[in-house]
Amino acid sequence: MEYGLLVMGAPYTSPAPHSALRFAHALLAQGHQLSGVFFYHEGVHNASSLMAPPQDELNLREAWAELHQAHQVSLDVCIAAALRRGVLSEAEAKRHGKTSFNLEAPFELTGLGQLLTLQQRCDRLITFA
Image 1: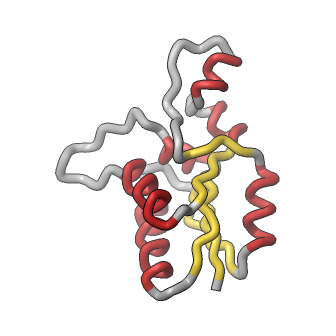
Image 2: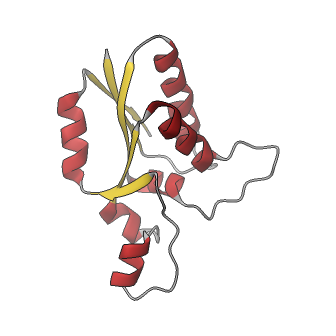
C-alpha cells in the first residue's frame, strides 16, 4: 500500500511530528511505500535547520532528513505557511530581502498543489495534527 503523510504539528510542542516519524518507519518496515511527507501549518517548523535540541533528545529535522536519505521520501513544506512563520529557503530569503535562511535540502518549499498530488497518488493520506 502507498502512503502519504500530512504533518501539521510543531516539533517539541506537539506529539504529531514524532508520531508521524514513528508511523513512517513502521509502515516502511512492513513493506509499504511512503510517497511523501507534506508539512503544513505549524508543521513547517520541522524543516528549520536552526533547531538545536539537547543532545539527549531526538533532532526531528535530522530524523526526517535521514528518512529522506534512506528511502527517497520527498519532504515538501507549504510555502505560504512557511513564509508566514519565518521558515525560508535561500531563494525565498533573497526574494524577500532577508539576510538569512533556515530551510535547506532535502526539504523543499512547495504549494498546496503538491499536497493534492500526494493525496491523489497515495492509497492513504494520514494526517498528524
